Length: 562
Image (cartoon, rainbow, N blue to C red; front, top):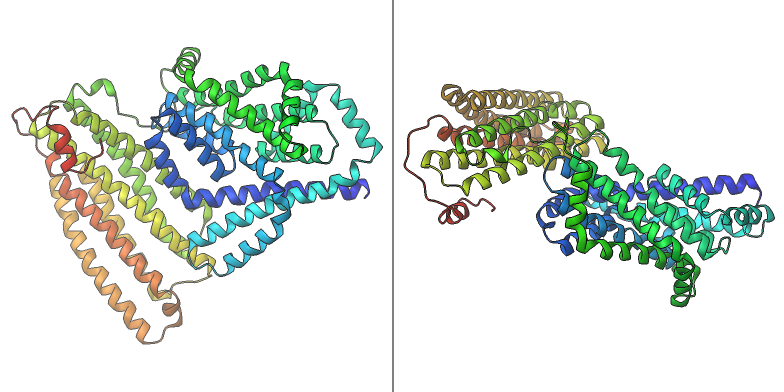
């Protein structure tokens, strides 16, 4: 094999590896990303559970970098704290070692059968969820196919004197080996890719285990660069998360550097295979620093808070009005929650506004912007509910309690509207785009009609809620009744077209009916918001409401999570 063939094969192998990893990560995130994020928010209170969650996230996303960036996003929105994040960070580093173990097990040999099975499953998948799972499996196969191509390319090169000379000279400069591995990891945004290549070099006996360990240490540092960049300009809390990841890795590397030869000797006694020696070293390094730092997370967080001090104002997206210092003044706290809910209502409006256009012309950028707003709605909704839950633990008057509970449920209704769009409407638009379907001209006109009616109600409800205008709310309720009647008439019109034998109507029938139902569902949530707003429109004097002792029972009755 000449140098040109080797270069092209290596480039192709790296390309397949990175594409496979991206395909697997993106589709697993679409299938389970939101649920996993919600689990992460709930379960990060316990350090060991957080450690396990970090491992799970990185296993599913195949990227400790992706997990770290996700954690930075959640801390930017003040959903989880720095102390809750650190255990998950350490767990994500352990999770990144699983891919290395799979490579050592020579999973590359089953890459082609995996791709065949995934392709077969994709062709016969009926739902988006199954298609995404099939694509994720295909990404897994492509990842290891890329590694196999690189392995087959490297095999003849180990006898090439020029390659041997380069690697021999490089071995004299461990710092250079670490720097090359760190930079390459940063450029490809994947320590797994770098470690895969290091393992292949070792398995082909082109480098020694000691050289491999230096490169491994460099790759572990390189994986921290992307989170550091992503934290620039974000909140101080998220910057602390990125720097925590960097400090965990770099201090761990500094601790390991004096013992590289001893670690190499230990790994050689544990496994005869060079691949397993590298994989075990990577696992040993990350497990060691995880359990080394885990007991001291609290002190580490305190150090970071003192080192990276809070700015006077963080110019990032986050709850703007939820000030915990106001919780002892319920009237002010309720006012701040009301303002935050108005911010949520504006985001929901910007989600609903463009959805009709997706059925006229599908635009992935527009879908991504809608999903970005949905993430913001989820984060703000959770933060507002948590704030109101804290407020409900304080002694309140009956009026203050009713207004707080009204806001809790209004926030939930807005969040439900976002869920209808994300889970139902966007999927239908994507389905029509994939199948190259269009509504009939009459069907398109009907969808436009109910969309415009829904937008009119939404804007009216938002204005009524923000200005405390009961008359406008009553008008919105009348419009909702009109939309309910319109929904029935449009369904009958569609059925009539089906009976007349319209081909386009027949192909899109289920989507058309489901989409009409989605708009009706949105209008019903808006109706609920108007009805729930009643306690906000008057503020009668009330006696002291039950204190802290009785509040938990009342909250449980209202199904509000404590």
